Structure formats: structure tokens, C-alpha cells
Length: 280
Image (cartoon, rainbow, N blue to C red):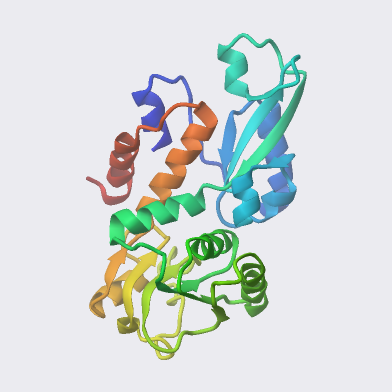
């Protein structure tokens, strides 16, 4: 998606995928900065770790509690911090200092995708969220900020869900939040866990405790495979469903704009994703 966008705008840029062990994440970030990368994306399991590994946090990362996008910046002789690309194009000279800034584009990505792909307006809805890790935490806080009517959090490690619930109660006291399964139906179930990425993964919830027919819509943040076991089961139960392609698209478009300063060619990026994931 990013390489297609660079090509569409005539940018001589390249987006690379690199697998990094969590214990080497700090060194990888520092290495990318030393090599004058414009920025990075981070995915599972790096989004929480990176909070303490960047020099400064954007308001989005502070608000949603995770970093999925990093931009490398330089300080000019005038004391102003700018993206490194501006030193290339605006003749500000060489930076006198460098820094990394962390952003979160996941929260904006999922809210846009829910509207586009499921027609869900979050305000006033009952939501059951699976997962309270990097993406899950950001999504939970975004749901609370959008004033859902009620939020249920389920996480493999209950203490993490309780921490996120406590943060929501502190920051958004008007939003009821419960750790555990809902009693009765919900408007929306969201999977923000990694269960479903691998063939043979178990479902991310116990359907004996929450039958999927009790969810009007089911959103799986996983986009490959395009139809996870959860989405298959949800479709069989008569739920409206969507995968995480829209979230991937919109978080990526926002990251593209953070790095380049250019409006993202969203249609080009969507076509590239669909071709890559669906083969058409």
C-alpha cells in the first residue's frame, strides 16, 4: 500500500518489512534513525514497548497509550523540529539534533473503518472488545472517547483488562466499563487479539458464554486471512461482519501523511491492499 502510494505521487521512497525481536526493538529504532529513515510502523508486539523508546510522544500516542508510527525529525539551526524530509527539500541545512516522535494512527483507523465497513456510529452503542494489548488498549480508549453506551473488555490476562478499565473510568467517568463477558446482546464485537492470524488458532472468546448471535456486528482487526474463523462463525450466526482491511488502510494513510506531509492517495492504497490480500 505504501509503495503504491509513493509511486502514485512520484516519491523516490521505499517501504520495507523487517522482523525484529522485541529485545532488539530499541536498537532497531535507533538504527533506523542513524540510517536517516523517515519513519517506521510498528505492529504486534511492539506498540506498548515503544512508548518508552521514542524521544517524544505525539498527543495521539499519549491519548491512546500505544505507538504504531514513528517519525524521525531534525532540529534546524533556528531551533525548530521538522520531519527529515523537509531538510531534503526546503534547504534548511543539516539538522543539528535528531529525535524520534511516536504517534498512534490505529484509533483513527478503526473508527473510520467501522463507519465505512459496518455503518456503526460508536456513540450510544454496547461494545464487547476482545484484547487489551497495544491495539486493544488504543481501541478501548477510542471507544470510550466516542462515548459508547457500555464497554465490555475481555483479555487473556485479566489484570491488563482491569488496568485499561481503570484508565477509562478515570479519563471517561461517564462510560460504564466491565471486565468480562456481557450479559445479553451487544451492538458490536471487536477482536483486537492476534488469535486468528495462524491456521488452527482457537476462537478469541468462549461462544458458550457469549453466543455470537448476540452480536449485531462483528469486526475482526485481523486482515490476513481475509476471513478468520471468528468471522466465519459470525457469518454463520447471521452477524454483519468486516475484517481489519479498512483499519489497516486508514491507519496507513494517516502514517503516510505523517511521514511525507502529503495527502494520502487513499484509493490507490485501497486497491493495492485488496490486490495483495484478496488477489484481485
